[in-house]
Length: 326
Image 1 (cartoon, rainbow, N blue to C red):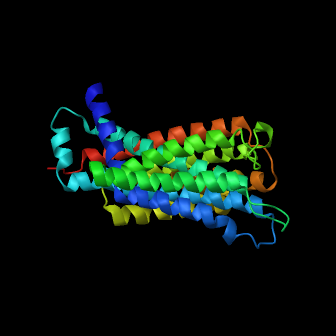
Image 2: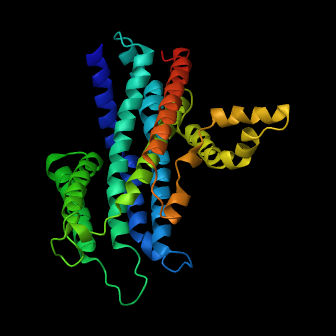
Image 3: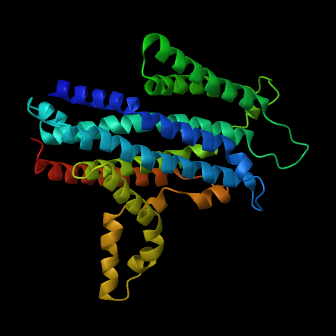
């Protein structure tokens, strides 16, 4: 049974990487992160703080889209194509199948978030030039754009000469090159000198990035639940609705639930329990106040996410048990 489980996880991970939309969403998010300094450089606020906020939001939205598309492709479409029937008929339980699918999709999304996080750190290191006297960080520009160009060239060459899938190979190559570039930037200052103390990398972004990744895992679990019964279009619709409610519901019902005056006020806990409170994962105040996100807060959020993902998978298994796949 473990062998079958890991086989499903591996195949799901590879199939997700091979989907064209997977590479398209990552490429679109990377482009948006790269051009974001030019889009927000004329605001009246602190541009670099806004750059961090916009970058984290980009990671969250990209994770939502990737989760929905990937879950629909590896769960919903396989059910419709009768591929699931072949797997289930080989002594693989439905519960094991759903859990393996989620882990495979989650692994692919973690890889995408890793790449986008590195790009965000590079963009924030360059920052927005506040004064005319400030100079561009040529280390970020040359190494960052050079690694992107090399990824594109190697992906096209691998597809042309060896028939490798462009999207999956380019993503893996991009992750490796971005890691290499980030390792160099950790020791090189903007003047090409070896000085790790002046690398200008925003390490304070790591806790908010971790929170965003945890939120993406929750959205992925919800997408898997939707994919057990719905197609891609309806799954995307449901996940977007939950996404919007998850950001706004705490502001609407949170004060009422924490300070109930009437019996009806206690009912506010029902939607707050069912809908994930995604506002907990966006630490906008900490970014603008330049405050550190406590480790205990991240631990509490991780525990909340673990319980919520577990509940989603149990619900997905319950829905899948009564789903006709024959």
